[in-house]
Structure formats: C-alpha cells, structure tokens
Picture 1 (cartoon, rainbow, N blue to C red):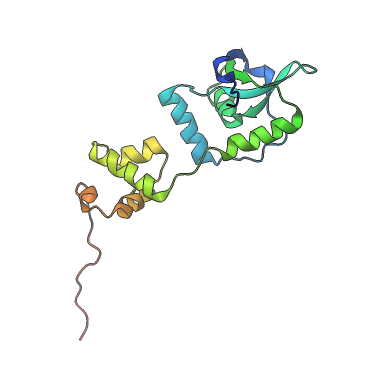
Picture 2 (tube, rainbow, N blue to C red; picture 1 turned 90 degrees about the horizontal axis):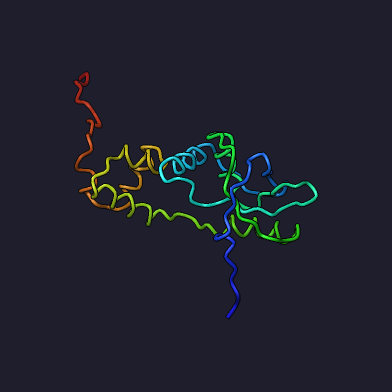
Length: 170
C-alpha cells in the first residue's frame, strides 16, 4: 500500500500579500468562468485552500494550484488573508504538480450536463435560475434541454410563432 499524505488537513491562514503566483502555469480561465468561480465562492464559501510551496529566500508562498481562486479572493473580494496548504517540492516537482492539478479536474460531458439540467428543471428551477447558478447562457441551457429529448422539459417555455401568414401577390 502506498503512503498518502494529507496536506489538506494543515490549512493555514496567511496574509494575502505573502502569496505570489508562479511563473509557469499554462492554465487560463475565461472571464465567464472567473465570474462563475466568484459566484461559487459567494454561494458556497471558500472550500479549497490554495496549494503552495514556501520560498524561504523570499519569505513567500508560491502558488502551485489555485491561482484563479487566489485572484478571486485577493482582487474581487479583497481578502487580507487567504487559506493555504503547503507542499514541499523542488521546482520541477512543483511544475509537474501544477499540471497534474489542472488536468485532473476532468471535463463536463454534454450528456451528463443535459441530465443535470433536466434534474434541476424537474426540481423546480427555471431556465434563468439554471443559467445564473451554473454560469451558462440561456441558449446553452436550451441546447442541453434539447439534448435530453424529453418534451416535458419544455412545458413551461413560451414559444413564438416561427412564421406569419401573409398574402402573396398573384
């Protein structure tokens, strides 16, 4: 059996100004997803500490994973302190850890997202509530509803006429 460590149980609250980004993270997040991350933190609280490595020479913690959470806390919410966990790795191991954390998150499939949207609709959420809480555009919610093939998902939706009758010249 391999040994597993639990840095997640060693959370520290540190001054935000003592935490800095790394210079090698290849991950970027678009503005809509940043807004969704801020909404998530607002709704659910801050549930995942920033993964860092302590740099004794500079007396700073360098972000290994959680840079975008760090940005939301420091720039959007202007938190003076942020929760971190430390891992003790050399630069090569930190770079690899950053990529592993980024890539291990998985992706949402259309089929499973469609089922999730259908479930929320059946539990009483409107299209607008789903869009707002999941960071989607209305059109995306509509496409996911269409993906399920269930007509009952459209029962509360208003439809417009797709065409109007007009007299044609003879």
